[in-house]
Length: 88
Ligand SMILES: [Zn+2]
Ligand SMILES: [Zn+2]
Image (cartoon, rainbow, N blue to C red; front, side):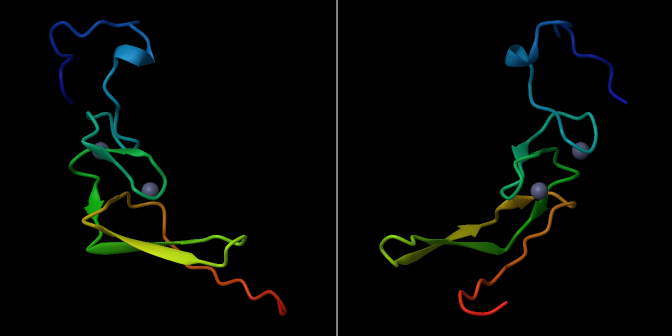
């Protein structure tokens, strides 16, 4: 447990507050790349690489980009889902 920092204004509203870790009450050092939850150093995990695919149905192009050392929380999982138009 950390004592409140000097000068921390209680009741200042969310606008002036540092983001907190979703899992504990420490100050967040980053956010999960997948779900956007705040993560402190203890609760952040690193992806070696995360590949995001974006397909545009109007043009038919699929673009990929790699995120290296992306932060990730422990709770959410990245799952690839495949959609086959003709079958279920
Ligand atoms: Zn934490
Ligand atoms: Zn997450």
